[in-house]
Length: 165
Image (cartoon, rainbow, N blue to C red; front, side, top):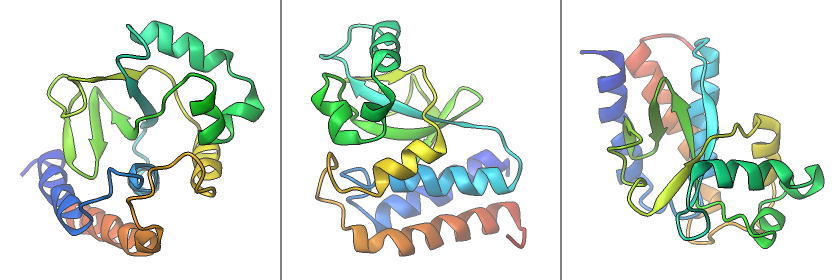
């Protein structure tokens, strides 16, 4: 089986084990997936998703995000309070979006109908800063589950890539 197809199947188990992961835990999921990809020298980007009602097109959203001052970008609540709504964070790889629900093209993803993918990169250090604060995140996801989530993601990648990381 193709590794991406196998990874897609295995990632869906994460969503089953952590049903609230996309209700405040998407950043942790994206970070864990990104770190596993990085270990395997697979190039990817962390991407942001925003509500379509906020931005009519990705260029408008991209420009709005780029205009935010660096100190604002460093904290999700400040980003949200400045008119930019971060609704979801995912990994982008070769035209595919990856999160705890699996892998799909943007067009076929569950996020495409109401939201816009933001065509800008959020750096890993910025994502880590965002995750270090509970401000601006949906409180439904239990942050006590983060270590278990990271282990589950690591085990999925070990199984699919059959490696020793």
